[in-house]
Length: 296
Image (cartoon, rainbow, N blue to C red; front, side, top):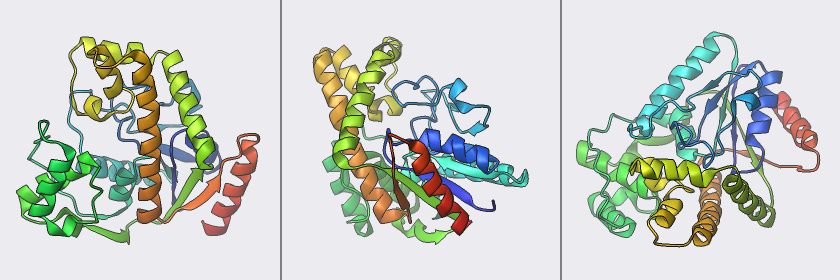
């Protein structure tokens, strides 16, 4: 297998299960492509794969940073490309797995990123104000950067202030690696039911305690402020909302995030979509194998 396999899609569609199956078949090693799973301590809320679920398949870029360490798209691009080379040098198949589309695109496409010295997070400015600031600085960003994607807006502002150039100039559709993009999906109603049930399961598995430990340590870093499951529970700990309201907000924000993921995937990546057969996942697996064999 001389191609990189990319497995993406929203939460709960079977990405982890498929990645293990494909790694076994194609002598693969798995590279995390989820921006929250980069961090240690964020396990339950990010649905991070457990050690026993890995089935002795090597996994890379999981839990590599402390919660108070900075980690940028530039860092991911550099790390992911290094790991891809290491895996290919062993004549094995790199398999990128995760739902952070910008991580995937930055690693595999011609994104000419630079180290960002400007770490201003603009904590006291609303996302709408930030977006207005961006388009005043960089008119090229209009319609190219989602006005609700706060982190992307911040990256674009900081990049422009450092280089006096638009971050969109450094993003092209030139694919640098021979890659197959596989997306797992299901119908919207089923997906939302899965997301809601998944959140309930996270709560059952101890998400509140996981978040409370971080809260008690007074950790208010970027992953916490942006991380679905953590930022809502912090509001509960601060007595701004009830526990029930926090849980419903986690579900709501997770559903909205899934919608944004689909928008990015469909507009930015050349994905072949497969419907997950929840009754018999082997049907989905066989369909994907047929596709890979025809295109490898």
